[in-house]
Structures are given as structure tokens and as C-alpha cells.
Image 1 (cartoon, rainbow, N blue to C red):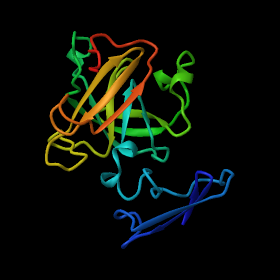
Image 2 (image 1 turned 45 degrees about the vertical axis):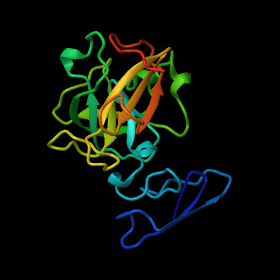
Image 3 (image 1 turned 60 degrees about the horizontal axis):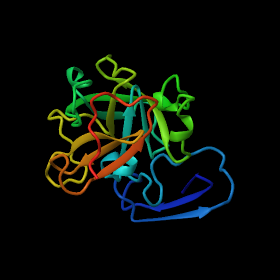
Length: 220
């Protein structure tokens, strides 16, 4: 058992804790904030449980703007590896770009609520993007480079593979990643195979202060 999110979480595991999906979970709501958060991985419902490869996309995938990622996961620790899908540098401002075909390895530096670290938390757009169930984290690239303040992308919790392929739903096909514009927002999409085809595996929106150049409009 552990405490977090105004309650107590109870979990039964088949073997060692957090080594696999839990056999059973329950949550006892207390009605007030617990002191501290000692639930490193086990949460009921769509919250993370077990190692990252077993997490649902909502807990493992987030949108990237500049050096920050926003994700429905508030327990990522500094040093957590992430794989970032983004544009190739030469294509970031090209007309009609939507497919994020570059993969880079990164690391979570820590939580933030400052626009100085996260462009979409700047004062001008803070109210559009801040939600209590989303964690915002600063990122660093493992090669020492920088995505740049205007870079957009999608981050997946877990190390970058040598083949630069990600298969979240384990259907045997590499996932693809894209972004598109809709009104004043950016839509981020993960596809279980070819981009812009079939059902979406994951989708989220953010509202940047300035829309990036060359991003195609989202289809209806």
C-alpha cells in the first residue's frame, strides 16, 4: 500500500512489486491531501502501474514544446529516459510538414511550472494549458544538444531504441508520429502504423503562444 492523490492505494502483485501488471488494485479516498507521495509506480485506473513498457499511452506519451513535455503522469522522476519524435532540423520550418520522423534520446530533468522552462506555461497562455492532472517536465537531450525554444514533438517514456522504432501497442508495426494545427491549438497524434491512417493510438492538444510555421491543418 502507499498514499497519494488524497487517498490510499492498495495493490496485489503476482511476484515482486512493480515488475508486471498488478493482479488487483483498490483506492480508498480520504477527502484531503496526503502528506507526501510514496507511490512510485502503482496507481489505479489509467495511472501508471508496473514498468513503463506496460503503461497505457496516456501515462507514457506527452507533447513536447521546446525543452518541456506535458504528460498525464505526475510521478516521473529526474533521470527518467524518454524518446522524442520531432522534425528534422532542416524541415522544422518547411511548408506542409506534419510527420515527426526524427528520433532523439532525452532525459527528464524535473517538474516545472515556470514559463521560463516551458513555453506553453508562459503567462500569456498559462491558463489554456495548466491542469492539475498533467505534469510538466524540463527535458535535456543526451547528446548535449537542444531542441530549441520553438521545437515541437512527442515524447515517449522509455529509452530510444537502436532502430528508432516505437511500438506502444505491440502490434508488430512501428508507430508513427505527427502534428497538425486546429484553430489556436496543436494536435499531437501517435498512429499504430502508417501516419494518417486508421484509428489513432493517442492524441492530445496544447495551445502555444505562436503557431509553428508550415504545420498542416488537422483533417476533420
